[in-house]
Length: 102
Image (cartoon, rainbow, N blue to C red; front, side, top):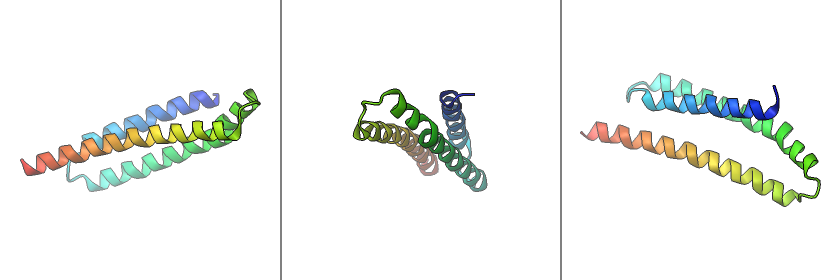
């Protein structure tokens, strides 16, 4: 399996974990803790694949690209990933707070 396939699969895995997290009840503290630990583990694997395989391959494929361009690409990807994750977590928190108040 190539790095791109691994990364795509990892995206799907993390998406699935976030969906499971969103569906857990407000008192499922242990389940949520387990899911968060698994999400962190998967994101760490994802970052390692990018750092060790994807970005070096990009540098090799586009030798004229400057380090600044490649670092910007990495940063943009990280920002988009974190924003997406934070958005989901925020939505879950809002829904939990609404249910608690109602």
